[in-house]
Image 1 (cartoon, helix red, strand yellow):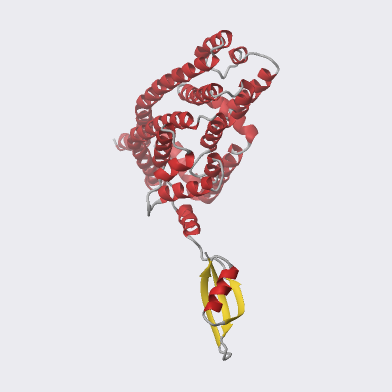
Image 2: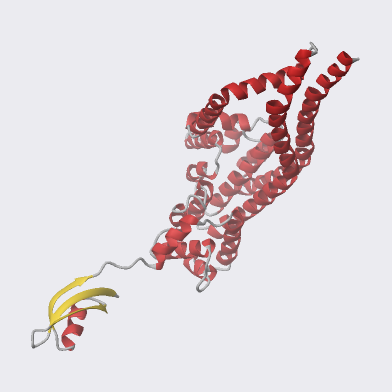
Length: 406
């Protein structure tokens, strides 16, 4: 119902003003006349900001956590697999008088889906919550009519990714604290302690060791050109950020990323797990191969793999077999090439792609565990090396002074 402000007069000519709510302008005028008044003016008031606007404002200030996004995918996968349509599933997740960023997100999604938007378009309105990869996978699931399966795969991937990242954070927490403490100690030694030692050693005409000379040079630079160094570091960070958002630069960086020992294998198999799993679901739901390949590039953040998928789509449209194209692709894991070739030859490409995705998941999990087991000792080794370097820079001049005194 809309709100109207009116001015009206009675039979004696007295002026009355007020507000009234009605379904339409005619109904508002009819209700005013029913009070024995004659309408002089009637105008519709601007709507007061509703809970939708308020929730939008509060939603901008607080975002759901990554764990809540994983929970959303898992819950929606269960409800969709039970046969509920999307709007009913979202309605089941919304709690009456629910508070918090997560419940506000669910309310906004339900509102936009109820208005007729596809789910992927509604999710695309929240880029800080749902990445382009998630949105593209949901779009592919809607196109294939297999949204429940896509959400199930997406939830599995996000859960494993979240657990791996949290475990890696826990492993690196102690070395990180140690590294920060060490760097602060380095600055303190470089700026305050070593210059005093240097003047004493100069009086004794002692030769400064190489570690001490390096730290003294660093001290001079920081004391005399600290502002310039800070500005240069700021410009360097800004240049890196700008370059990172350039597609041509990202293409080469992402290609190089796949070749990093240990970490590159993890990224490669994790990306191909999503790509092969998504492609298998699309084919299983009746989408032809070249159309499925057109939907696939957005399922990965890696620009190099996006180019690989796009070129694969062009090759398939020219009549080449998928297995033959990927067999010659360096970015495609060698262990999967024979599987895709066999799927092409036997007509069971969909099944082989699904098995390939499962194999990628196992290998990615093993690589993640290996990387996590190596992260802590490597970090401690690096920090230990810095501590040893600092100790040498202080102890060696002391030993030199003792020898000079003796």
